Image 1 (cartoon, rainbow, N blue to C red):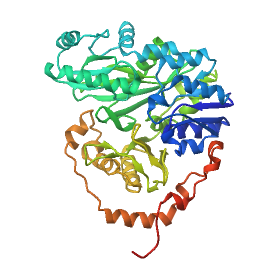
Image 2: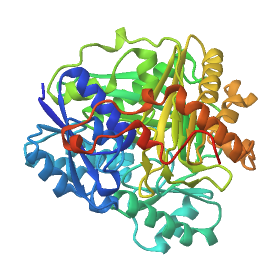
Image 3: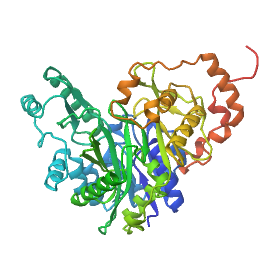
Image 4: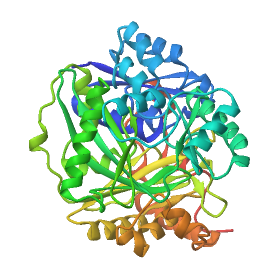
Length: 501
């Protein structure tokens, strides 16, 4: 097993990986940009090194610098988390060349599944159903126009490298194609360093269902059942759950075996997710492989009892899977809500600033994966996800109510968040009935107004909460790199006083 792992990421996923490493007795090294100097993941790691200025291209996406720091810190392996370098085949290859273990798929498999065009070609040859679309990467707008006419509008523009909804655009008619392509290419370039995009037929009102898979380095492959990810905004998942209300046992088994076949024909190892679109007639189509740990992995962990980060590390260390498909079972129901620093009243624009106070929800069946604390700064430079709230219960009805209660107990002061919006999503009758599609948010929440809270109420909540449980929400452990910058709980609140004017 590894003695030290460098985590090439930031925020809540880095905190999650650090905790797993602590449980496994593995030392951790963190990297951070100048904007993240006081971040929670930096404080929790055993060691931390600044790798550059705030822009990701100069820090978290700087492959040479990340590898240099791994050698400097004597880390045997690098865990990329999700986003940034997690699905970058060139980075995985450089790690292999530098004798550093990349905790993810091998570079050959990563290059295949990361190239959406090649991946589609491979799956089609293997007899796996795919969505009609382009089978090569064109360079001229005229080629895109001809392909769109052949496929038939509406079409979906997708980034060939990466995922997470970045670069995606729906085009309903030809006059929108050129500007949408340009916008999608800019976003893909910014997110993945690769502007390549392609077209697929846009299937209207489908469900988005994905299967978690694990494959060791010795030919053993399992799936850990599905996750329903249909609640999306701007092609970005915001609520996930398992089991899917749409699947019968027979369909679940069929899709699970298809997911395993995808992993096998790709020569894939480590953790990965096979994504499908499920139409209203229960036909499913291969979408892509997300070659990394998914944001929504906790719902799988809570229903199967399998720690996916532990499995990633063990597989990368050369160990065999310790279980087979026939022993895996799902128990109960789990739902995850992604908590974003976004303003729901202003077209969900990302927010930044200081977290004045954080009160985490707690209780039986409640899990909170967070990258923030009271007094921390949320920078403008990165994805605005702050945390993930996950619940487990014996059945879906109880899980929905548990999530509503947990969101109601969740307090983040200092910036706009999506907490109230998510409460209304979970409360919606169509969600409670399990009737969700990728068009759910557009159909039912396009003009959501919610309930605006007054600034006075926020002040009262801050004062009441600050003295109730402040010390329990500040980081307790300081990494070696930050011992000289110890935080005071009182300092984290900023200027304050009791009474007076």
